[in-house]
Image (cartoon, rainbow, N blue to C red; front, side):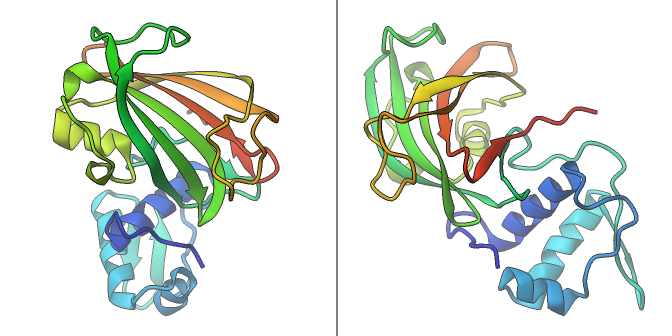
Length: 234
């Protein structure tokens, strides 16, 4: 059973999870999904909620619903979802993303960060990432302070890019990821499976807005025993 978040509508989380499975090639064009009651039981949700998710997939052209036969995947092109630019998966594949905000602070930009945005200050957001309820990664996100004066923990949904688009009018249309190895940060929560100071995979990401400006920088450390970074191209 997938562990679902309270911050995003359940039906939308199921839509995003199934889209991730299609994008990863684990659900292929023409594949028949399990019966609706069985699928709802797998997710731990009501059949009515599942049907709302399936209706959304059908509206996007990713599902064909044939009465008396079943629901069939229609993977005709690269699907779009809330997590379209999210690159982490569980080792065995997939995993529904969720996040816990640890802290939010407005600070002078660290001199160790690459240059981004016009302001000399940024909002530093620390989060722990989960995949289907399992701790998977740590995130340090820096949003240029020009775009919003104050930012509180309770302001932030699961998807930062969704927040940028709806609250700030910023669409992250392109990212640049640089993969390396860095020590696990000292602020890692006690339930994170990697100890501070341990070398682990690290992703430095630049998020570019619709005008090509670098509006944020993020750093992600992920647990290589349970999580992998995957970028697929068509």
